[in-house]
Length: 302
Image 1 (cartoon, rainbow, N blue to C red):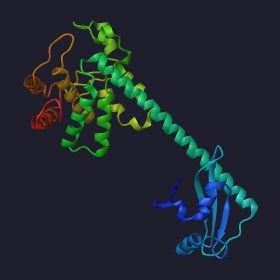
Image 2: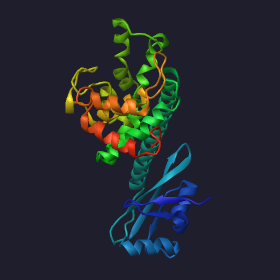
Image 3: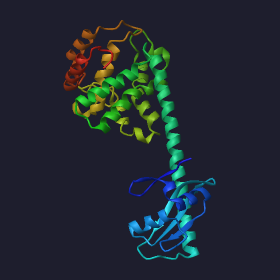
């Protein structure tokens, strides 16, 4: 098996090029190498001389009996003979670093597992709320293309992409009889439905990498004239990502069959977006969306 290690400047090298370091990684036993040591590996000595170090202390980062990394202490050009107390202190520090790295890895794995669960819920919502299982994926493609057209930064594009995938995750708590109701909703039913943006934000809150996604999900039902929910934001008070999502989500909804109506044609949906631009939708976003969707050979897929 071949092992690689990343230095503090980011350079990646093979441990096989540094047998002393590899030996520490394999045996879990700390090692001290002096530049004058005649028995030391030539590659280690060459490394010390190249960077002007007299001594290197190599300590394994151990978790559950297995080395997960290496911590090296290198001093100036003069050799230094470390005391047993200093080596013990360095080993204690290495153990703390190893535990911190393992905890970070476990947290990342837990967060990834939770994120995959949330994505599964979002896909399940597509089948509950629409007749097309690819609703959110299609929105993500459109929203990302529109975000690039509007000169969003890569970070903004990423947040908008994730918001498109997860925008309706809060509807997991809305009963089917409300989601699929063929007629108008009652006031009580609307009150339940209007909670889904905030509920969605709560669901994704444990995933730190989705921090920038939350404001988009919270505001994706806001309207440009301030008549939306949950906070009645208007104009540019609404995050750009939410204004983008409102347009692509509405186009998708209009061109999909629903329980209570047949789908509009592509042109019918475009006409409605134009009619409601400046009222329900950001007119600039509508204009840019029409540009990119008219450029596409198939309006259903960019």
